[in-house]
Image 1 (cartoon, helix red, strand yellow):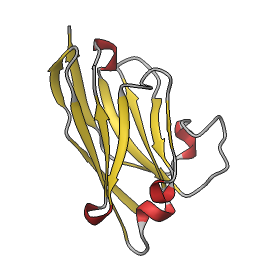
Image 2 (cartoon, rainbow, N blue to C red):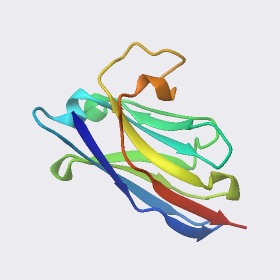
Image 3 (cartoon, rainbow, N blue to C red):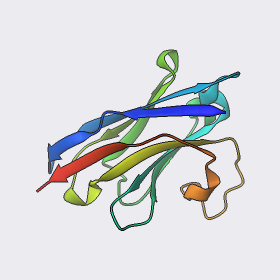
Image 4 (tube, helix red, strand yellow):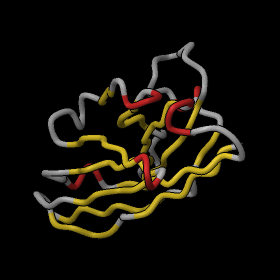
Length: 130
């Protein structure tokens, strides 16, 4: 069982930045060297959208086209935390942001497809005003 807690959301104007945090814990093992950690977002009335994923051990990252060049992932092993740095924010980035974890590497619909992820946090709201 993996427990995930997001933080760092808030309200910013377009062009601004936010850094989201995903703190993970697991009963045994090193979650960040075992699990893929993904970030997703869901706006009202829309489907959940995959934003970014970091591989176990941080060996690779992958971003949705909608955020490529603006968002970046990093991790702090000592704090068991993955960060999503969001720059040049746009009003269309407004959503509830979730982090999620999975051990699997057989992707159905790609690595940013939500059904691939077994564990989810409660989310943190990001609001970008124009």
